[in-house]
Image (cartoon, rainbow, N blue to C red):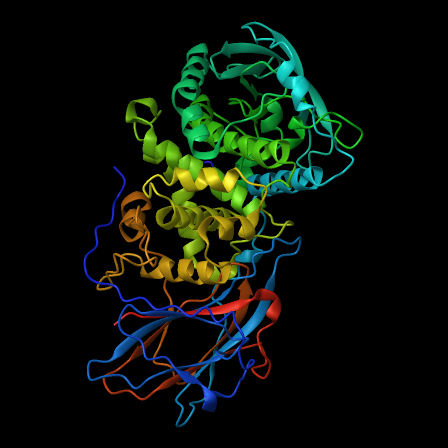
Length: 559
């Protein structure tokens, strides 16, 4: 996570004419000859979802009318399976006039930031999610006998009680260290322990009482309403939070790296301790850092640590709820990393929306929960969506751009498939309360193929609040956000997604389609301009795009 983290509602008018062809049914095969191209005669606002591996590799835009025309063309990898290496494939787009193709001009991708150095905090969390999934799928890791747990006598936590916990001692969480700690605050829903060896000066008692009350009164009901209930395998009726310098130790040189692990939840704690699961605390527990102002390589002030506790609590608690709902209740696999993280970042948004300003340390819940995380992460993703996955690999370094994509996609789903579209919590609760995971989970709850959802979302990322393109009945917008206004207002940055702009003939681009992501191309025809052919192929131009990415083309007429 980054060390530095009145909502704007969009009002629209006008009419929308929608048309959608998924192209997933039987076709004539991937013809790469534009002489046979279908002409896509669209009204303004009308869209198509086309399949380049059926009969839509070459798309023909018709002769423009007297006032010209403009289209958004977005090839997207819609493969929904999360794999260790990630699903991706090289592509080429070639634009030409059907009458006479101009010479192709290669445009290399401007940003190869998918290969930037890993962000340590993100990599750590991605590793935990992958380990959870492996443990949840392991036949050798048993579940608790829930009937015995429910029948057991609750043992309440008391202030002053001491307990020794097992805490990850390496960024790989492959070894553990004892952390003897004392319960400093015990509320109705949370017990906050502080490591006895945490450096001084640390959190004040007021800090801990305030965040404990905040969890009881606001964060717990927000998360449980949006995602469902947590387990209670230790039958003590509370969620345990351990604040320890062992978390700080997972980012030993955070000052130089610019990334610090604020906290974590590890689903292994909800499974019995065993040879394959030696570090389990057999309790509902998540972890957070502590102030450590005198650390020469990772200095954490009390203010910095205190202000990040609420977003950390609401984020990690979602992961705890998700593991209970998927694994403990339904015996299924833990949720896919991309959707699990998207839901936890959505939880942060809910904190910003539902908490009174008086409960937020800076006086602005937007600042505390969004401006230090989701907003800059989304901005970073939209700078170059092609270079990052929505459905990141299991081996992902957990980039902030991926987290931005995860949140944006969940936010867009909630806008269009929840009955309460501002909060969207009826959809998020359904996404968590299931044995399905990932894209299959999303498809089950929306009844729309992922091969349609992913291109619609990618078109939305450019079209939302685009001046002159008002489509109030369309899914090509965010109902709850106006990002063209948010980015300049909150982080003083212009809207980041700038498509390639071409008239068509002579256009050429090669790149990589990564699962859930793609390239945005704006095709602008002058009045009376001749037809334009856009051909999507594999990298040589003579073969189809690899079927492994399940490519689709989103096409919409803007004017």
